[in-house]
Length: 319
Image 1 (tube, helix red, strand yellow):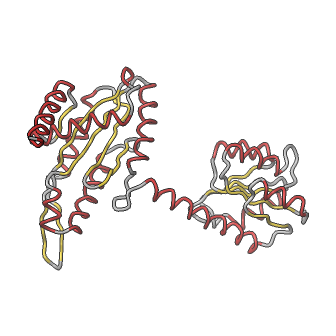
Image 2 (cartoon, helix red, strand yellow):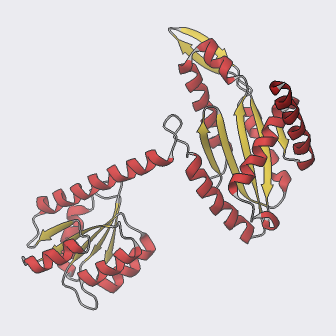
Image 3 (cartoon, rainbow, N blue to C red):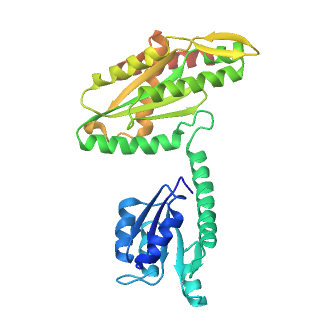
């Protein structure tokens, strides 16, 4: 339970103090409210993981408070403390989505067991949610989550008339690394890339692995396009030294290089879909590979040239 926060709503100051003493070593943080109205207000401010509330309180009782909280977050985990051993109240609480019903007088073990059950269930849900949104190998967000976060970043940046830079990143000769050193070495390379990207970014920037050796980055709140040059320099410097990989006691020094395609989104172009922006950065990345340069900016005129080459290659293959 130590990873979770708790909102405890209780109008009786003595009981509130006793319960806080019992719980304070079991939760990351405990927020205290004295009635239902205060509880709803504090809930909106703190967004706790678990709510523990008395059923009988002035101003707004526990059930009314729970009703309001469930409208804000239908999945909120809630435990209800009550002196009423009444089937009507129990059914009402269950129908409202209360997870646990704890009878007074409070038995510390009973209360802790009930809250531990909720915390265990919550952790499983969070683990499943994380797994569905992140890459298993690197822990980076996956394509679906990246698109969602990119939309948010574009909205927040363009409201302030700032730019967003979108990067498509591909490893050079990754197949050769797998073929030469094995897939475990390839995985080590991917992890190194993920680490270096994360360490080169600010906390509001986003990075994802799309699969294989495909990565994506977005940097928001840029005043000028050239403000990304610092990031590019940090990335370049982070791969100056090869990866030291040890297999069966033998040391291998594996060089890592990247091809990076870059496009920008501004207030004037924020109606372009995230899919289209990533297609633009992808095309720029392929241009970087073709030109043997580390990075290339998306250029619509170069895109036309690339399309012509692709079309010609397709015609040759069909011939």
